[in-house]
Image (cartoon, rainbow over all chains, first blue to last red; front, side, top):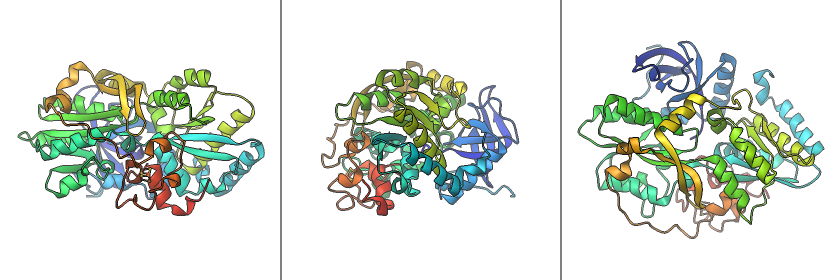
Length: 92
Length: 365
Ligand code: SF4
């Protein structure tokens, strides 16, 4: 449960106030809503490390891709399939 | 900084392993706090390749395992009797309560939903204004800000039908409690990388001082863990006890201060009951008075009897590093993932589940 997964911010679509920004983040094509309140510096195109729907840090692209690969190889991405507002594909 | 792809290079792993062998002259017991690391240690076969002199103890860092039985009963009560939409992380569902699990309650018709994030629970509350939505908010410091944000989110949207059933635990007080236990034989700790990306590691300075134990902030990949073990053994062999950061590519000394601010806004520290271990002073987080409207305990005036723990399950001794899963007489027999007696057999971060699923490692001493 304490797993954190890197993804790329593709849009910031709901800015309730300065602190509260909700973004769409792509995890290798799987899109999820992510809260950016803990990473005020994050911008569209940045990679963020996401834990249960909140970004906990901005990471560089190399780190993101590397971690994603490991998680895929370790079969650790099941958590992303959980949830109600299920997945759309990035290309849709 | 090393090139990142090196972190899974098997040749490099062998080198680190060789370095560990070279410096180890005495037996050492090292505890990894985090259940994710336990899983990685067992699954990747690290336990089988470490020098005989090094024993890994598997700590209490499995949020699902330490969530009190009483709280699981409360969640089931809310779903069954109060007919709320009970939302939870998937891991909680199969944990046995005193009579049944949330999954069994769901099978019997209760509206129990598995979510990826607490934000989704807020969305469900928004879409179902005529229903009460409760999020089962469990976790360590890593998860606390996300759960706190869900409360702030609900407040900003003016939702009156959202609340949380909260059980939050903190690592540093648990380390103190483990060290104070007279049966403890722990020589050093690997601290959990993602907890420290939120909290930093300044909280560990007084602990290394007081207990004279090395604490090494460590990541999750096999090579991270091997390097964490190396750094711990090196300190032990040299008679040092310091805080060291193996996971510098993700963890800063001060942590993520925005995240800490969010935690402090919504939560305050309190005593906390850890399933199997008991109450540890100032080791949990509860909602501040300003946010008590979001406390499911108060909102639904839950008043159900406290059921006794299953006395057969020795999860507490395992999480304190005193026993190993295969020393439990029920391990793999009466207790298995299909028919669990205790939480560590069902959680993906539980030591019993890790040993059971990768059972060729269960002989390791
Ligand atoms: S094997 Fe089952 S009964 Fe034994 S300690 Fe683990 S969870 Fe408890």
